[in-house]
Amino acid sequence: MDLEAYISSGILESYALGAATPKEKVEVEANIVAYPELAIELALIREAIESYALLHEQNPPADLKAKTMQALFGEQSEKPKANFTIEKSENQINNLFNWRVAASWALLALSVGGNFYFFSQWKSTEGKLVVAQAQNTQMAQNDVIQKANFETKIAIIDNAQFKKVVLKGTEAAPNAFASVYFNTISKEVYLVNMKMPVLPEGKQYQLWAIIDGKPVDAGMISEADSLGKMKLSPNAAAFAISIENVGGSTTAEGPKGAVLVSGAV
Image 1 (tube, rainbow, N blue to C red):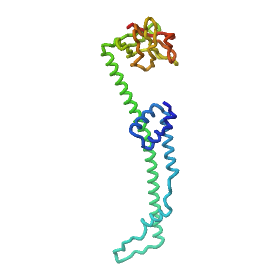
Image 2 (image 1 turned 90 degrees about the vertical axis):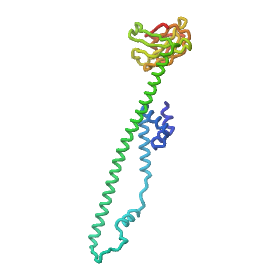
Image 3 (image 1 turned 90 degrees about the horizontal axis):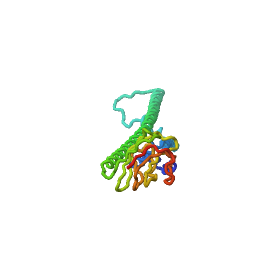
Image 4 (image 1 turned 180 degrees about the vertical axis):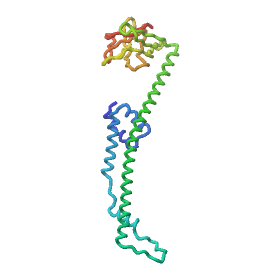
């Protein structure tokens, strides 16, 4: 994947703002698991959005506090029903007013602090949830792939047109083995399973079809492959697997590295 092009597409910003489609959300969450760089980029985008919001926040009108105080502590519209009045000194009224104002601002400060704390906790939880959802999505996709591979393998094994070719280990790798299914009608070739030595750095397995006594390239194999469709191999009399440099050997040259397994059709 071209990560720079993906980041420049704006899909991460849409995801961070909650504007991504369900399909885009699944894609982003899967890519976050596959590419840690995208998780870092998404965190930076969210920080930038929050910083922008704080930078452009607006202060309330200057007279809002006075209006609020008037609404809270102003003269009551209803007249007292009692036939007597209680006189209070100016100092007592001021003290009561100041106490109410102090209590109001204290409650406001506690509310703001509490909201900030819960917002921080929510952001932390949201980040963990995104990672968990992405991991679950990746696991679901892996399950789908494994199920498809299993169903394909069963279909090949049950197909009478396919002939199983067992590739046994050579002196170079006596414990290695592999199974190739060769369709004698369509000439399709499937590598169904294999047990091979661990690949050294810069090496790759290559399947060969022996046709008219000559090795013909039948496709490259990655170490993780347990089921792979290889190249068509008409008139193949045998198959073999060698260990080659990444990219493999050319058909004309044949195997350059050691042949690890082989077997006749």
